[in-house]
Image 1: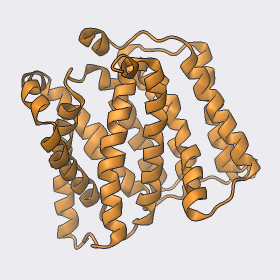
Image 2 (image 1 turned 180 degrees about the vertical axis):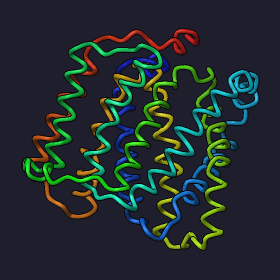
Image 3 (image 1 turned 90 degrees about the vertical axis):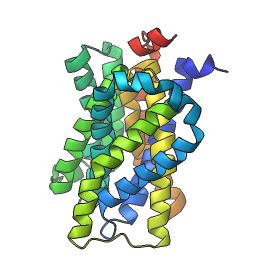
Image 4 (image 1 turned 30 degrees about the horizontal axis):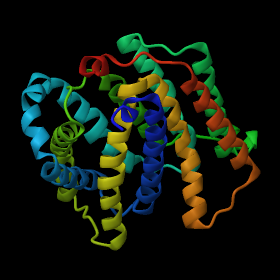
Length: 308
């Protein structure tokens, strides 16, 4: 069983799982847009993650403390980029942008990760894999344009879109730099990330409170915070981080294109929307693209080689 969870087959199960979790977060975050201060929501989720992981992961945490101290700077950097900033800015962006814009602009993520991996570590995809990224991107565009080029021609940027672009750049750096994270247990890494991310969000949460923004104690807000804690953060981050360790950030990046696919499925299930022909074509292109990216064997990341 342990061998399976270190295999590419496990990675290609974990990556769609993480994407599905994040797609659900987009739905819930848009539901509370306008009446939930984003930094406060992000701060609360990281505090809850810290409390939960701290209870169940204590044995590993004690053993891993020397490794954490040895790479304290790396942990701070990863937590502030992939945790505090990325998490809070997602909630901010979803207050100002539309679902169409979110799908189009967010699809730059895989390209950003490939670029960051090349710039920072000279990691490159094979031509077939690059083609797969383009195929999956075309599937995203088919869904958000509904096969009508006029919809894309009328596409315009707003402040929320610019936040998404900046946020995806942060995520790309985080994803590329996961290879240099401390070689510790997943619970230890999540606990350290939760603590540092909460500290990073705290000044902004305090600022929101000072300017009169309050978190409304509604069932919707509570559900969103709990979903962000246990699904978006704990489950999705652990799945994504482990999969990146196995197949590398560049190959993993193509699976971010499955987020619009899962968003459409969730909307169909929970909002009563119907599947249209453009959905079917888009889904087929996305799945074809990620299949191409996944086909070529990958050399394990340095961190996995050191641990194995």
